[in-house]
Length: 305
Image (cartoon, rainbow, N blue to C red; front, side, top):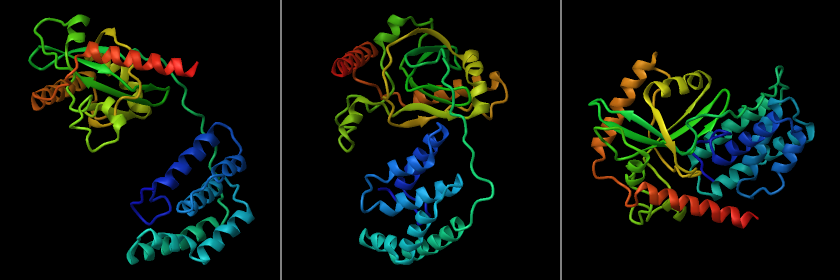
């Protein structure tokens, strides 16, 4: 469990519970059923983080039962949560702050919420030409051509998750898919035992120099229009799946008021990244990486059958 503050949602467990509760609530599930599921396998150390998060969620939707509220009151009165925090090494300052926050929390949920949280329709998946595997041609400020590869993208009607990898291509003439397959990616992580020596072994097959971001409604409206003004898709590689484990940069789809401003901003940023990472390249060429992901995906499909 990661904890960074003494607030009710100042830890990973409480935030995860809240996220799952409202994700399922917005899909139409009954709050009582969600609560029941999420309290089935509570870890002793995380028990009260789960309970407090659920109490807050149930209060938000106007379905906090008296029995559950009494259970929360009892736990706070008996300082059960504080006792666990002490066992886990919390200092006196944290305990004092946590105690005050619990008092305020209890006071808040003890009064029925006048305007309860309504269900929000989940985002609708949409198609995008910038889906995983898209090979995106562009021009640097000096007029030379470069290429990005789209990975880990998720596209919805009102939100967008994008992620790109920059290749080491910088050519006077337009590169072909053959040129792309023979190029390398600007990234220090993929297949690097040295870089990943301190990380979980699964990151050996991931990239960390990703250009990634999340766009809300206004950014999503600009996403394809702005991309189309700067990028040209010249082909597709295979879908490499969830292979981004780090964000190195983002593109600004918000502050740039026009597509021309976006083009100028992105060309400048990509040029800067290219020269700042002149010695950072994957050992494998893109064709080898692509074939490895194809083999891995086929193996996974075989195990599922």
